Amino acid sequence: MQIRDQIVLVTGGARGLGLAITQTLIAEGARVVVNYLSSKVQAEQLAQQFPNQVFAFQADVTDKAQVEQLFAATKQHFGSAIHSIVNNALIHFEFNGDARPKIEDLTALTMTRQFDGAVLASLNTLQVALDDMKQAHFGRIVNIGTNLVQNPVVPYHDYTAAKAALLAFTRTASQDLGQYGINVNMLSGGLLQTTDASKATPDVVFELIAASTPLRRVTTPEEFASAIMMFLSPYSRAVTGQNLIVDGGLVKG
Image (tube, rainbow, N blue to C red; front, side, top):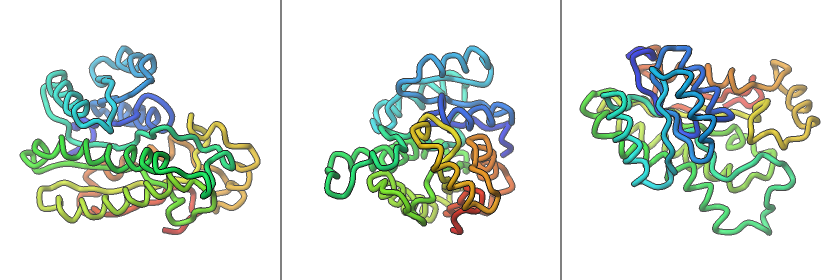
């Protein structure tokens, strides 16, 4: 199925990387469900600007009941079920370097919060979408990961552990769901210049990353969003269970 024929859910789709993904999908002609938690103004602006392509809906994706309401409202709005999901939402996190909790300061709540935001949220959206995707014998799931799983150079213990678990879930889900025409993949980035989550990062860190990267620059949200289109397009119909690292070649996956 071409991207222009799809209804794509982008969790956390109103700001940061999510906004870049939403804008790229709009340019490709897709209908986009912009899920948000607190970015109401930004989400509603998108819906007003692109009334035929964007449906904005507030939901906490770690709450399955709210996810069910999101999917039902989308079907009523567009008259059709969601075809593809980009699990992008980032829950209670900021890329603020040394200000992140050290090993001695980590708590079960800190770890669980990131696990819920990464794995539980992705499980919720997948489970609610599953019946319609099976019936259509088509589905595309793209989970957003991090290159810190392969190269943990900063102490983001909670975030990195949660994304590692999401990578494992991506692979096990792909094994289970391929028989139904559902492809499940992950795109993993490094630090992006710049998003709401990375705005607290010192300039010297961006400079260091650029100097260490083969392309000699830091990847932008728009560049990362463009790579997601491959996993949503027919060109990747034989690709599932994979993790594509999009960071300018900094980490070799």
